[in-house]
Length: 458
Image (cartoon, rainbow, N blue to C red):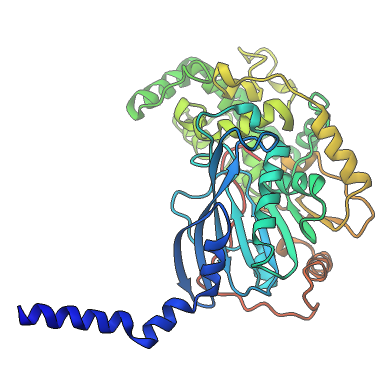
């Protein structure tokens, strides 16, 4: 009994210790976060020179009718200093299941704080029940506007928004609807599909990218695969049976999945490979095994399955309804395609989510970027097919740079030295950071590649 009393008294001394009490009370950042209405701190970890928070923020499912349901939107905060610049990172997709500290290129260049936002309708940031008409560019931009407003008194430095590919598009849409929220935007490899059917720019890209011999070899892969359909589709069906893949919910059949994957192969090659990788392209004499394995490594036979597509339904829904979807002629495949109307965003959606395209939002955004936007920096890769249709920034303190020979992973570091210096100077000026500032990059915060997926997604 006596030993139990001693133990209780000892625990009370620990609780009441002045040092312990001071540490518990001396956490103004945590107090500020917890005081934000609707913001929940899920976890808090410390690193060298930073803290990393996983958070959720309660958002209206429909910002036009905020009383009609809410959802919890996931986000993370990489915090270095409340007076440092803050980078708002919109990746356009979901966050990792277990988020870890990473930083975008602008975050590293500015030694900034970073808020990373999971796009609405990517699980688990999805209303329940879900009204998919609430998934549009204005609703997501308003999500981000509310997040910036919520952190306004906590993070007092200048704000920069960034994102790659669909995340870059998302940053542009936020800027269009709420131009006063941030002090500048760096949009990486962001496509601008202004008029959905007018996609000749993509065909021109594939007619000129790389060398004639590489283009011919890649076209040959698609031709050979479709010519060998009767032998290769059973392989895909067997792989599906072995791995539990199905097709009936979305793409339809193994044969349709096969054709869609073959059509994606050349795009996927240029999206993530380099000109030097042309040497790996199989010749027309390649065996079925070699051809099937190479396509799997480039495009992935597992993607156009129910299991591969379901996590990306929010993207395909947006592409079908607003964002647009690149269409290609595939003239070199005449007579080899069994499904001429297959290459659309709706083909990757279940029937109840398929939508008619509304061209107005992209026309509006494109016109605004060209004529009224300011402090916007666009980075593209010379050999990236997604850059065939690019945003055109206004002359208002904005710029566009192209990284020579780069693919969908283009960034400031891959620009020509003079262009990289100019882009960095713009970024630092917008962020309120001296041009001579030397960022102290933490080795335990790796760079985020900012892209949603390895497959042919923006």
